[in-house]
Image (cartoon, rainbow over all chains, first blue to last red; front, side, top):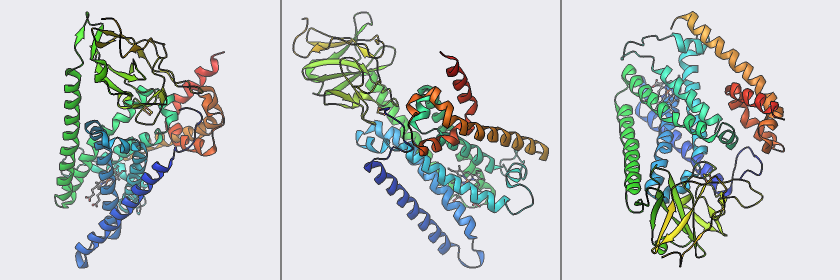
Length: 354
Length: 72
Ligand code: HEM
Ligand code: FES
């Protein structure tokens, strides 16, 4: 939690992860260059620069697909959650690979003339009205700018000081960048008559990414409408289920009528409720555990006391709490959030009004 | 895109970024404390990773710096 800033929050686990990504990238680039050289050897060989441009570009796009799939995968199956932790490092690495691709491309196609290469990039092709000759590089440039913005603001400092909602909106631009890149690859291939393998792969990638997003969305939609959302008492109190239906030291997540999720935890015989949204990066608190008496977010381990939603000292983070009660052997939670850090009276798992 | 439009775009961008880079250095050593006291004893490398973002988003940070400076 916010004890002080460091440049990169590396832990042993994250170093291992980043090292595997770097090794993976090296193997990919090596294999791509090797195979391309074998395929296009001899008279009609492609220059090394073009092979490198393609290797780096396709590597960046593969990484981007992985990034876009991690979110829905983690929502579909909790076993993917550990790779979610490091999505930001992956984002920065992807930007660097894409930057290398763009640098070699600009240098090779625009750098050897008398024009400033950037001016050449903007002016050499102005066929905006033609699909076959569209300046696909400008689409790549816009996507690269978005990726830069996201990489440059990936530090926690920005999350805190741009406000979480602005930050989130900024990082949602990744989908826009993805759209631009589909155009970059499809139109680029159209222009160079480089065959349809690239666009075909891109299309399957698009199907996988959208399929996963739809599946995860459907799952969440069903969960929200399913058991546990029964509204009793004029919309104020929401039914959670019997106390022992909540696993010990874990939560059951319910959805309030307005759509916000509430995590109802049971630990040490008492039941208390907090918002499902972590103050750090909006992680799903309800998928976390109670560790050392504190609710622990599954994403980066921020902790909150169940009874008042405050982080244990010396930390100062707070999340919204909710009133809970037990009526007729059922746990109910009040749908109205209390201000972050408000103490509540936990309900006793064995007892209550009946 | 015509040559003159492209030059104008690139010049504007270059001026914006140049101003941003100057601002960023001032920000990571001074302004940052007014908007986020948690940065007080942060290492140099932390300040370095903020520079690219600060050079681009400088109008936002400048506004926050001014506003925070006014508070008693
Ligand atoms: C200023 C920005 C960019 C420029 C100037 C640029 C330029 C190019 C050029 C010239 C090609 C065709 C290479 C060839 O001759 O085969 C290309 C292809 C490609 N680019 Fe970019 N690009 C940029 C940004 C990006 C970004 C940000 C990504 C992805 C993250 C990307 C991904 C790709 C891919 C996947 C291909 C197809 C590679 C292949 O067919 O094997 N590009 N780009
Ligand atoms: S989102 Fe990072 S700890 Fe909860």
